[in-house]
Image (cartoon, rainbow, N blue to C red; front, side):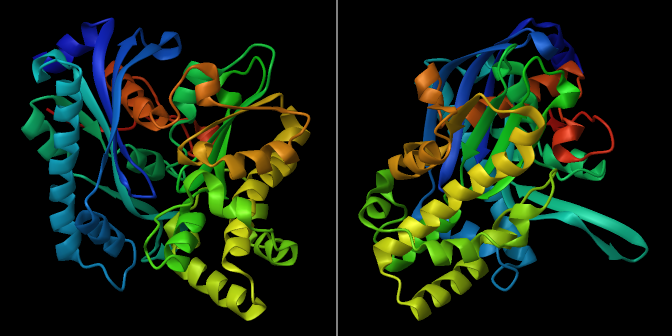
Length: 396
């Protein structure tokens, strides 16, 4: 316990945040300096790097997403393998910063989500929500010698929440403004937004998944290029195509887009099975490949904008949108969003001096620090939890 007490008593901490998202393309590692606690938290990014998974590891991870290709043996093995890879990422970012592990106070690791069931299943007299992230934190703590906080989502789910979006708390700490309503739009595999009404208190923050981000675009690009390309670099393929408006409107009829927040989604909804149906329908319609990429890019853009129009603007107004995540580098996607929000300021995190790729890894470093502080670090108005909870399991 002395180790935790020593960290707790520090006003300035060095922490590492580790994140692997729904795209499962690698581990984001951010080394940050955290000063203060609670609503007075300040953070400085010292180092950041993405450590890509090998093709073999990525294939094994994707095999866990579908019940027909996953087994308990594979999950068990990959939980520990990913723990090793997360630990390696932490040690490499420490070395990049020319530090040693004993100088780092703690690690916050999101892990890798392999399955997420945010809506209750009624069975055996219980109403069960569940979620599963792997990347064993005990392995991370053992290999690095650093106190590790991980598995954040499950406590929020246990309290009746969706277990996401988790970054709403850190968005409130870092980006709230007195005179503007700000939307923090992250576009990873799935897109999620945190809405910070002007002069907002923490119990007024809302956040939810708007729908697919890069997930559907990436899968379509991978299929039409027979695996030669994994994503649409800068949106160049989409820029060559023309949006099939009729097909887009049909895709936008998905029930998820009209569901009231709080809500979350993932591969269980917009994964392989979704793209299988989408590709089949596109083939029937004779849609050209570049037009299909343009159309699914527009699906991401339109689903974000429609979420604002339906759930945000009527209640809070909207002055500024700040976009982060891999989707912020897709210039075609960003242009589509800007065109639809022509009276609202649309920026990327880079435009305001931050790093889009690092945002979520930084968030988990802060969430881990708040766990050590003994502070609640979920926002019930964002996740739907019954009450605030302190998320994260500690491995010494």
